[in-house]
Amino acid sequence: MQWPNTIPPDLRDNLHSLMGQRNYGPAEMWGVVKEWLEKHEADAPGGLQIEEKPENANS
Image 1 (cartoon, rainbow, N blue to C red):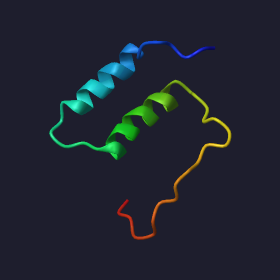
Image 2 (tube, one colour):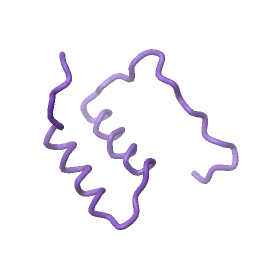
Image 3 (cartoon, rainbow, N blue to C red):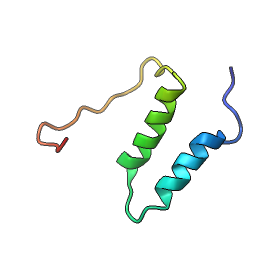
Image 4 (cartoon, one colour):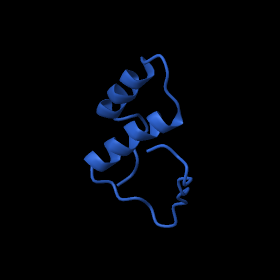
């Protein structure tokens, strides 16, 4: 299946809600996208680079 040329409506709505907040950054944006991918059971591609969380990072 090919990726669509436009953003899916439910993802657009979720991102729009996030961007309406006063403060958000990459972590919050990724949280919205990750939840959407998991909801739609999208598998992570092979060879995806994963950044390890620093030991002193807060939850």
